[in-house]
Image (tube, rainbow, N blue to C red; front, top):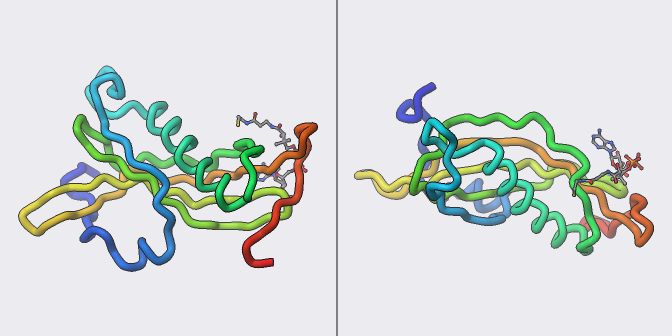
Length: 144
Ligand SMILES: CC(C)(COP(=O)(O)OP(=O)(O)OC[C@H]1O[C@@H](n2cnc3c(N)ncnc32)[C@H](O)[C@@H]1OP(=O)(O)O)[C@@H](O)C(=O)NCCC(=O)NCCS
């Protein structure tokens, strides 16, 4: 689907703010582009990991976490030079030692209709809390 066909939603939809946690925002600049002039997927994944790991640190209550798994990474639409790329996530699963985050990457557009958002990528990421020896360690869940 071309970017122009993508679903744009008014910023910020109530359900997004209610369910999702804002993680980070990055501006797409020249060094972030691939040879075709679009946002390089590897750069986007690096930003995604960095942004959502900070949310996992806050939720899990420890800095000693690792990324265990990147689920399927879907690049929904290309990111472009000058895009303001936002990273949002919500808790998908609270495990004993792990936390799975449902992650969305959104771009903010300014149109005649006002401020709009469209999704350029989504994935889910599993983080694991570790003890001082690097072994999985139970973390204190909010719901407990
Ligand atoms: C993280 C690490 C210590 C976990 O070791 P492990 O042998 O998988 O440990 P466990 O089997 O006890 O699993 C730990 C947690 O991960 C989850 N997990 C393991 N494999 C998984 C997978 N393929 N998908 C989803 N979750 C998984 C387990 O369900 C468990 O979570 P829970 O306790 O909430 O149920 C080890 O794999 C590691 O050090 N990996 C490298 C991490 C890394 O370097 N990341 C990149 C840089 S941050």
